[in-house]
Length: 274
Ligand code: BG6
Picture 1 (cartoon, rainbow, N blue to C red):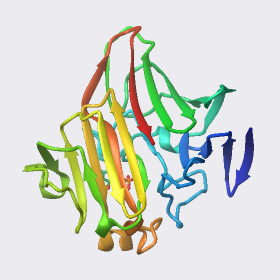
Picture 2 (cartoon, rainbow, N blue to C red):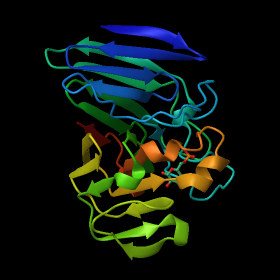
Picture 3 (spheres, rainbow, N blue to C red):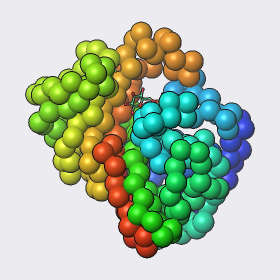
Picture 4 (cartoon, rainbow, N blue to C red):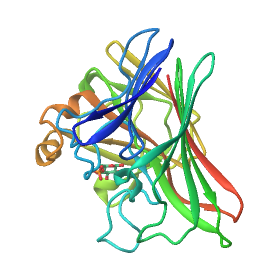
């Protein structure tokens, strides 16, 4: 079944089928919860202090960063991670298939200050034993366009101090050290604030923490971003409980270097969670 329910100032789309239960906020086109029924383990983390006021970005779930990732390339006054995560999206269609429910959403507009392209943007969610998230950018204009983006997923973990991320190697750019190039630790574990752009495109990653094991597949990306604000930064963030960082790890399927899309063409950024 699919139902729309108001919560605080936001409309939520609830999907419940034989394989999974998922909650999607129409504000931001933002998946907040994904619980596959074969193990009943919540795969996504949502801050207890998340602002569900329909104005501020939501802390947790799967924020859609588009048409830029992080700070805008030239205008520092523009919102971090672009403007569609603070827009109202609508459901274009929602269909039950034997193994999954397929939902397609669109933002109210793709135009905004800081981005020139003429586009159609769709978020397609395949909700079944796994959650497949596709962000499709179609160039409907007559000029080539370039964008950056991320499926900025907050994964639910048991304990950041007992957590390992496998599947990454090579170097990363450390955003906390002026984008210094550093080699990826193996084993990849966490004991401090982490904000890293890995310029590699592994197809498959795994997070293991206590009883929670989550596999992540990515497509159409040029980077994987790994982020945890740790204790001090969490305290300074209004929408993050002080201890919240212990139960989350962001592993983001991202385009950080710029993806060109020619007129009439489209590009799909995809993350699969199981
Ligand atoms: C990460 C960035 O993707 O998102 C970090 O690399 C940033 O630098 C984090 O702090 C959270 O961003 P925001 O805008 O949601 O607070």
